[in-house]
Length: 88
Image (cartoon, rainbow, N blue to C red):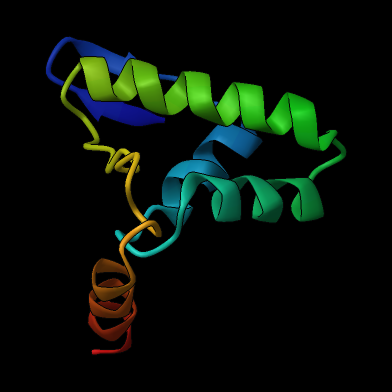
């Protein structure tokens, strides 16, 4: 259950687990992989469900997703800085 100003959102176990895995470091794909390993769900279904959950929560201002920049990885210097930031 997620308490919000308007009331409460009742979450199923995979949705609650996905929210618990949000730490600012894991990607959506990493969260989906963890959900697939913990629950009886296909990768495709888990990805669709987690993506929908996060998008709905983002619209309401409960989470803030970092969207991949289309040029991430295309610039070696940016990629090196991103890797260095992750190590710190």
